[in-house]
Length: 193
View (cartoon, rainbow, N blue to C red):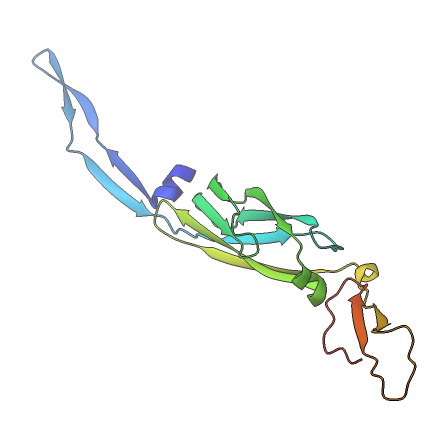
């Protein structure tokens, strides 16, 4: 049974008995108890699959990730904890996953400017399991979610403002204030004016 696989062994004990009649009186004769133990070959393993969106578009966008843990061994996983550095507050502890069964949980991540600049979100989630026999199978899964190409915009405007609107003589100084404004979606660097 599954319980015996989880326990790692089968313990079987037996006695033999028979009726014996002598002098018109019948008694039951019972042998001493005999037993044997057969050890099970336990295999503890799991597969983690992380599922994400097809793409993302803007800063502040909430995107949902799914985590599917399949028990690929032959013993019950008494608990599995899924962690994801992208989602530190992820609460995903799964219990009693039978062999070949799958359990699921979800987490939410909010897109930031660094993700827009990188044009993708790459990260790895980890599943750590436990069994009644003390085994601790683990697995990881990494996915890369690309930015929507239409959301990649690198553009800027420049405004030039003089310190005076007119001059009357040679040698008068005019100071110009130059303002560069990022009108795109990505961070601009090494701008030369």
